[in-house]
Length: 122
Image 1 (cartoon, one colour):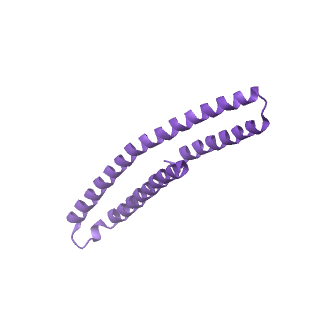
Image 2 (cartoon, rainbow, N blue to C red):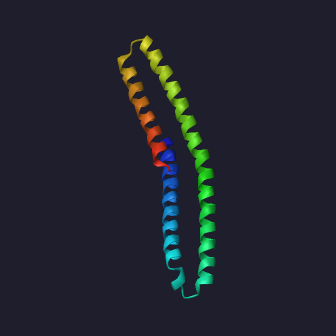
Image 3 (tube, rainbow, N blue to C red):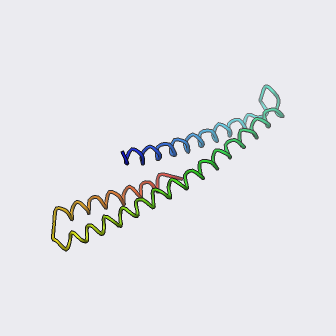
């Protein structure tokens, strides 16, 4: 359940970022063809400006939302790493080899996930 929550938000932000990038590419094509517009260049410029303003608002909204979510990801993962490291060190004192390997693997997975999450966002 927790993993699907992480993946769901990651996929949502990635898809929204790709959508924004695609919309900017469409806007670029509209700017290139602004003189060939059937409604006239004045209306075409107005449409391009309104579309650009809408995309800027979307980018700001995405950035504000992203900052909160990535902060929660990093904070939660840091707490989990600290607790897992403490449990691993306490397992060292009791010389449980199976338990130690479990913590090492889990810690490695969490650190890999944290770095992969940080690298997947622009």
